[in-house]
Amino acid sequence: MFRTIFGKWFSIVSACWLLAACGSLFPDHLTDQEEDFSFSTQDADGQGKKFRQTASQKKRQWQTKRKLVRPPNPASVRVWLFASLASQAHLMKLGADPTTGIRMWESYLQLYRIPFARITSASDIDKATTTGVLILPSTVVMSEAEKQAVQHWRDRGGSVLSTWLTAAYSPTGEPAGYAFMKDVLDVEVKGNTQTEVDDTYMIMHGDTPVSHTLPAGMRVWLERVPHQLPLRLVGKQEAAHVMSWARNFDAQKPAGLMAFNERQMPSGLFSRTVTMGYPEQNWLRSDPRQISAVTHDILAWLFREPKAYIGAWPYPYQSAMLLALQAAEPVGQTEIGIGANYRKMGGLATYYVLGSNIAKALPSVKKIMEQGHEIGFYGDQFEAFSKQPEATQAQRLESMQAQLAQADIKITTPASFATPMDGYDDTTRRLLAAQNFGNYLSFMELNESSLPFIASRSAEGLPQTVVLPRTLAGPEEAAEQDPEEGLTNFLGALALNTRMGGMSVVRLPSENLLSPEQRKEMFDSMASQREQMWMASAKQISNWWRQREGVSVEFEPHSQGYALTTTVAQAFTASESISIWVNLPRPNTKVILQAQQKTDKVPEVVIKDKWRAAIVFKNPPAGKQTWLVRFEDSPTPNGK
Image 1: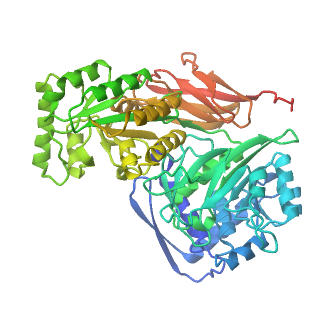
Image 2 (image 1 turned 90 degrees about the vertical axis):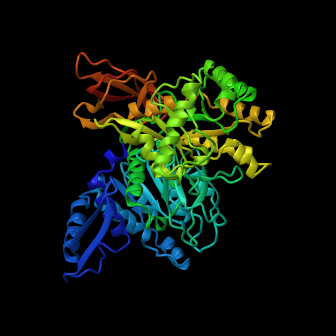
Image 3 (image 1 turned 180 degrees about the horizontal axis):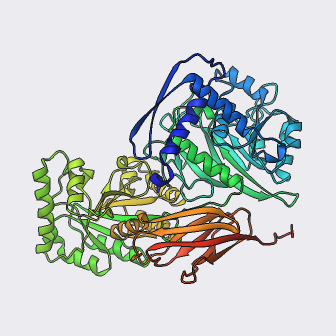
């Protein structure tokens, strides 16, 4: 779906926006002198493209766009952009470009034809119409009058988007604390990333009202700028975290980076707010497609524009977990006990077994199979495949299958596979696809998100081999690295990944070193999340992902509401239901579906929370179906 959303046009204009904001594309001082201009970007398929125009042509286009988007009257303004001269003076003292924030937003709004107006005072905010969104870009300094104006704006039902520190300093430059951010913007500041030099990635939550275009766990690199470091936030609802490339988790350090909320104000009106805990300066060298995607989702929610998107996991789950027991040593009574406990929770695990010790492990393996768990391949012997000749690797893949077949272990195809010690290379991956393996485990370097992805397709173009990336350290690894806090950090990382909507591959070796007390703590934590977390085997997850890959959705305005069109490439064979999430324009909104064809069955609609409804499809047929979607408001508790 990422490829569908980010087409070539989106890649180009996103790159144009970021370059424009940097001052390199449409600088104000350009003359009509013919100067060559060129830049490179990549489209959604990773294909480099080259674009070339003269500077004067760019300037004329820029001026034309500015004329087109300038609103004829305040009622047409979609965004009120607050330009604080006092904040710019403070940023200048820090050695930062004081105009970066304003230029980034103006470039973005102009490029996407969003009518906006720049405002500069408390009286401007008071006069602004709340049909538009108020943006506070790195507004580090605010007067009491300006803070009161923003509070009044929210009480009038206006939506606010703020970036980085807001009202953290007084007009005289004295620290003012973070009370304004807590009381007015609904977010608490717990520090920044000063001492964590590796925490330079925004890690996205998936399937939230303000972050659904980028997949769960997606890494968005942010430049580390002195004196303008990302914040550590605690919000009512979080949509992104600041973490390292490896997504390392520390229970002692809050890591929220983007938060959102909607609350009913004393006036009875509802006001939405989003806080992005990083300054615009951090965007300058980020992937413009990613930054555009984040910004699009946020503004659409603040504009109260309904959006529809396919849920990553079967309804009603928010995330998925694969318990992967990797048996370098023969499985025994301990592993049978783990399987029994996991089945009591309703989970199915995948046990990866070696061909070389299958004879010794056979009685236990058969008991595990009787519990309903999947048996996957772990190689012919405990040795990495990487760096071995292709012929050797191919022979080893054949040998391990023969070893299990001779032991009368029947593994249904397409099979699941994991390499010992994550020891694979490009040759291994190519052979697995050529031999039609259904899925295999990988380390986290193969994917920027924490979701599965399709590694190969059949000759007909259908999804075939699925990669299941391992995105967090296993419990034993975590406990070995930090005997005191390791297991606590692992369980915290697992809970965070559940909230993010990602897939958690929990690797547990046979004859592991966890004590019975630690195993109980781990399973108790997993059991507490089972309503949100789909505890499925590798085969179940990969089958689901292949089916989900063939579903697409379109959501367009219609004279009577919105038209929701689903296209299903192949009839669903998975027993799990797929959901289309719909962002609600207002709380207490009822979603009404009407089929456009008499033969189309109207799916179930479930209000999941204040902001989202799930349209649940059970066994959707192949083909295209369209429904009319209408939103009807229900009375609020106080009748307003």
